[in-house]
Image (cartoon, rainbow, N blue to C red; front, side, top):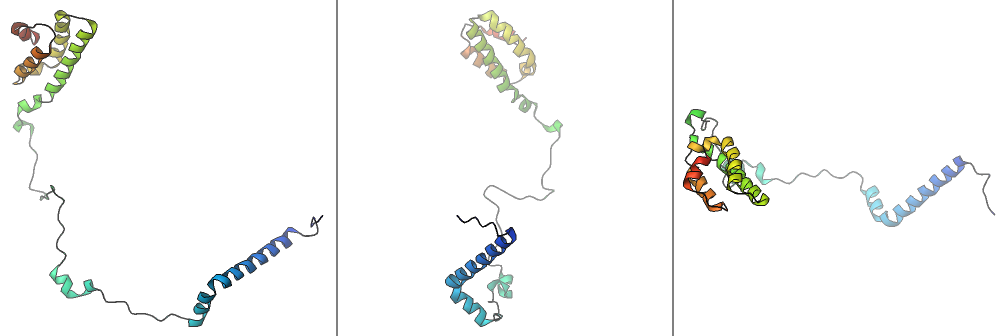
Length: 170
């Protein structure tokens, strides 16, 4: 049995580095022999003059053959002083109600769903609707009240008269 107790770690490291050096020299000569010979034979490479470029001529720069960049479709560029912002006095008050209408309709739908789920009747719907009408009291005087009332008459599961509908918003 060979145990090699008489070699030190320093001797082992030197031997490993030596064998590694020999290995890479053999691989370099075997696979890169021609390139290695050509590298040592030619010496310094000659300085080559760069090829002329077309865009470096004045003719190309003056004619602007490429053209100017265009904006993507649907995008326009405006000067800084070509637009402005309006104040609150110029806004249409009916436009402010447009956001309230869908919100009110959603709450009315929720009230109708609650009445149907609990088996409630017209009085339960009226009490729930009073909460909605108190929250969206600005809709009472708006131009969209007729459309909202029409939607309510179409979707309520019980009979509701015009007079009762008018009292709902009061």
